[in-house]
Image (cartoon, rainbow over all chains, first blue to last red; front, side, top):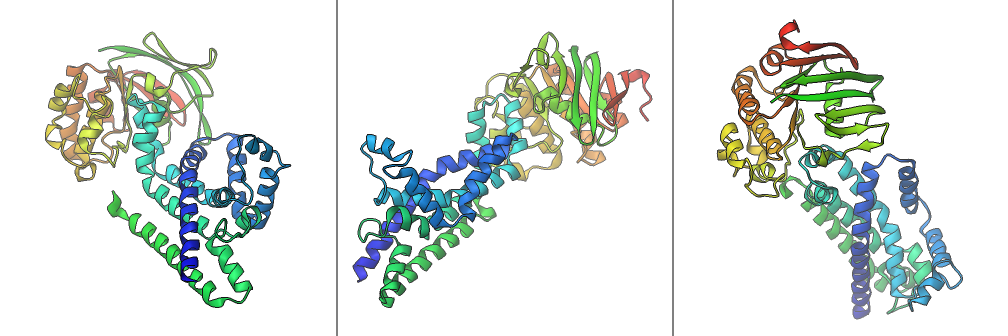
Length: 221
Length: 221
């Protein structure tokens, strides 16, 4: 039992970490763009990105199955490259990315909005191009918000259930995560195992938020 | 060093339209007027940080903005130094890194002369938050000057300083004007400062030019 619990926990952490790595560049750039752009498209993109925050995760999962399934618009394309997604670990990562992304994007956007605009403008008057401004001014100044957003997105990915269940299933040893495993064990009356998984789940989430809170105060600058 | 500038544009400024149609030849030009008159907006437009609704801006023979031809030179290519009201020193960098931002951390060009004139040499090893108000102004001025600007914009640089500090800083600015021969456009609502630093003045009130000409002919009180 113990090895199974640890195996599930380790798999979930690895998947959430991988999903966070994938989310980071997209989320940071998107957050920056949303903070700076004033076009009508901004509102539309922001609404789209935030949808997973308010939609039932199961509905998101259903949508992902449609998108990446054999008859969906993206499934055959991936299959053309030899990539099988649905009911594999890759589907777990995709579900985690979609569900965690809004938290990262929104936190990043707030960070860029609050702190960096005037400094970016001054840097540009000093001759710096957009990339130099982004890497030397925007990113370092929004560092705390980005870190907080990353930890939040990672934590959210760790706890993802509905979308993962739909697109990746709940296959022990292949796609089973902490939340889907808790569901399985609780459903079949194995409360001790479910309790062990719950404890690990709480510990990881607690640690992640603790680290975030410890890193974000003033002594980081 | 005398410069000529054509300011002929319209831009929205809060609840009113700011309109300016002036061609000025000056060594130092002051923008004078009460708070909210639009002085900072004019500097932002000259620096390329805000885009007018329509019009034309020309510095010497260089066209910076023209709504007619669709030209809007990015701020990094305008060669215009800008010291904003809050000075906006990059808080995550040392004084040295701030000053050398424009040169990519190299002590080339006018580094020695600028640090000598502004007496910022002893401050180079400090962090930004360790500086006094007057020191911050001098560092921001040095940073702008090391981008080798053809024109220097200063937005009420002494507002946050008490009278004693002001008296100590003004001579630095006069040395910049006279020894480095950098033309200055200077925002102020202090009549004494305007008379001491500028030879031409544009008086703004609620986005409209109410007077313009030589400071010698104006009773700004």
